[in-house]
Image 1 (cartoon, rainbow, N blue to C red):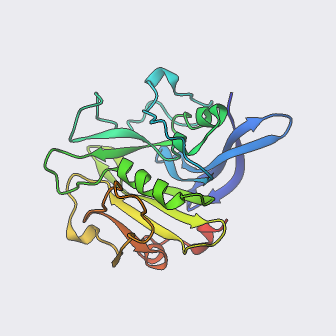
Image 2: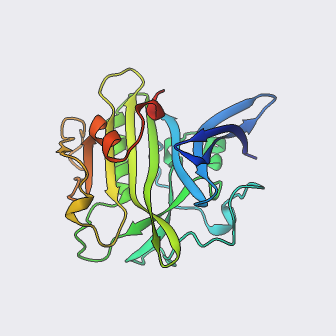
Length: 245
């Protein structure tokens, strides 16, 4: 079974702690790491290294397949997952931070199914919504960027809002950095809200066309956009050191 290793180290905020997820095989083998905020009852960010993609689609596990690690998460706090069915729209779905498709081996995939540590509420668009791109589209764009590169991916949740008594992140993001430094770090932000506005465009957007290599790639839309990395840090008040390999 996957296990965790608490690092007894703050991350991003004073209330969040760094936790590594992996397996104890005589020594601890890390699969990915999480910055988890017990006060928000969800992760602020995950970090994983990706070398290839599992082409088989993976749906979220049924609720009885999720593992709950003792001492992690509070089952009595509503996390805002309002989607009840796969085809339901206009609701918040339970969404991975560290995507199991980025892990090839079965044991590594299993480690992605630790509840509380690896899920956030993600807005599922309504029909004819101005928020056309989905969080899954961001992952698909990322897959094209990989294209044989070994990369690090930071997946985060930011700017938590109280929505009907539940803490929901207004922004979800991914930062991608090549291990070989073949391209500058890039950031993709998705406005995680049913009511995005012009104020949610936090930076001068950049074109990813040179990195997206397949004709079938999703297209970024107004409220799912790529930022210059330094602009991204400034607008979300994050530190460059938080994204060091």
